[in-house]
Figure (cartoon, rainbow, N blue to C red):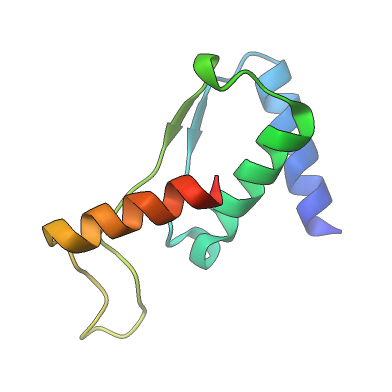
Length: 85
């Protein structure tokens, strides 16, 4: 399905020399980070040669909870991103 296609696209990109992957918890509500993690494991990419850029601060579509740049939420978000990837 779509996930397989996304992982194949990532593999082609990395194998062609792309070394910067840009993602965020907000992209697909974490799915982007999960797919990157799956592609990294499946293709046994050398993480030392890749730059993986993620973001913090945006978490919810509800305007009252949409953004949170507090220290605690930033640390929590980074840890979750690392776990997903």
